[in-house]
Image 1 (tube, rainbow, N blue to C red):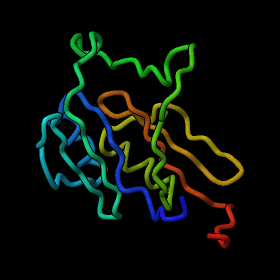
Image 2: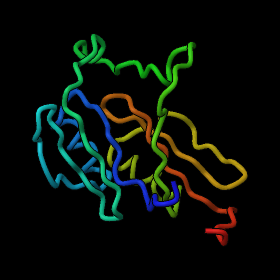
Image 3: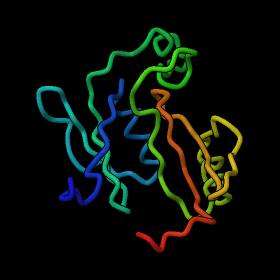
Length: 144
């Protein structure tokens, strides 16, 4: 469709609104609306314009009830299912973001990955959803 202009928001099903809100607040997202609606939705937004809708109807997994991380069925099991595996958020400085995450007590879920276009960092949110931070260094964006 030629009329598309941008991604409006990311819908993310979460098991605990307060825990998710507080985690994403560390990343700079501010709670701007909700929860509201029949399947309650709360909205957080980053100053750069990224908007996430927390869909508040996920049950806690057995692992979460026992104080462990839930398994991410799209990333952590051998059989690969269809679906969105992660969101990638563009950053300017991977080294700075690595330090900021460490200062906030948010561990990387893997070693930083260097690839032909730059560096990627990966973390997991409280529901074990994957977030990638990607610093582009070598990509030609002149076509944009």
